[in-house]
Image (cartoon, rainbow, N blue to C red):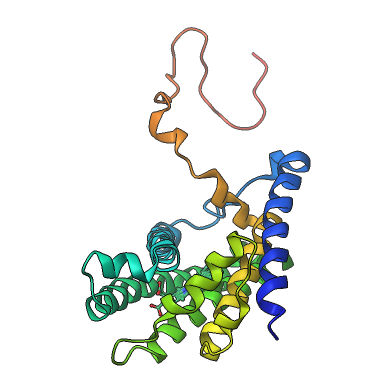
Length: 238
Ligand code: HEM
């Protein structure tokens, strides 16, 4: 069992980094979300920001929770209980936004004909793993939220950090509650899938958009020299 906690993370990292390089070299112009906004935009306009803000907060929570050692926050005088409350309310709010967002996005994808028809087998696998990772994270957290909650900062977090120094401490994962273990496995599988799915768009956040010059759109003036109205079909020969 302990090999899961060494082999899987490195395989996932290889798939993620190697796959991203491969995609850049061989499918640079297929690097897209494959947006379905043209098929349906009303639900998408609501659910997409809810999901993306939610997952962004979840991501920030993971970075803080997994990469800031317990000893650092203790040294700053932040005790276990206040930390737990912050993580419980902050993390649960972020997770709830994400769950709500993905639920509406999945509903839209299934019930809107054109959106469903544009959904490939690859997308379905991705949605399954993504939803499982989110639901399991939320489930593990809420199932272990009583008292000071489960202190993953003494087990999962140092294990994850030990991978970066190539000295994996798998013993740390041995006593971790099963829900957390399954969440971590599914989370790693999801990271491995990123380059091979539409999740690749994670690496192309539209930062440039904030700084690029405006694009000017003008309606076509009818009747000015050099323009003609946009009548459809055949034109009568004068
Ligand atoms: C190696 C990968 C991952 C590790 C080690 C990990 C670890 C954790 C831990 C320890 C928690 C519980 C926090 C708590 O009890 O307070 C958690 C919660 C959660 N995780 Fe992950 N996770 C990973 C990947 C992912 C991925 C890829 C996603 C989603 C795409 C995800 C979504 C969530 C959600 C929604 C929660 C519940 C809300 C929250 O606490 O933010 N996780 N994760």
